[in-house]
Image (cartoon, rainbow, N blue to C red; front, side):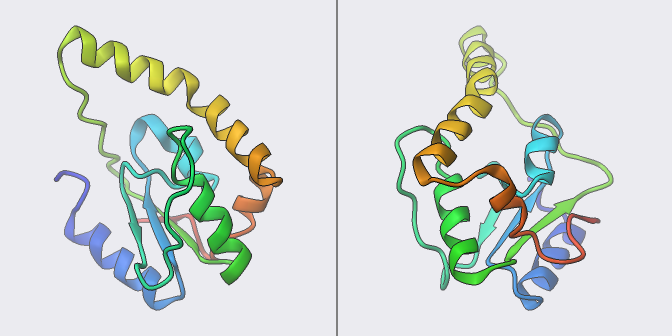
Length: 137
């Protein structure tokens, strides 16, 4: 719940009022990925009236709907960058830490596979960021 501060939620509401179809919040471990428009389901809020659903089995389920949203709505991705970035709450057990390392080490490669499958590149997703975003909150 440290992610869902009053300021972040108010800023997300403002982003939707400005035309966002999805709002992603930067978390420490995924900062560069999220700032490039590849919001992560760690903290993403999807406009359910526009959300096209998930269609992948690569474990990077956010890429496909981002691409389809940008194809349909153009600039519709809002990224919020909190001044105090929350950290992921990874299980403190050895297996939890190992699983987290594995996911993080393979995330970019799996995202690349997904954009290749969709016939686009990361610049296409980045082009879907709303003007004025990423926004510091």
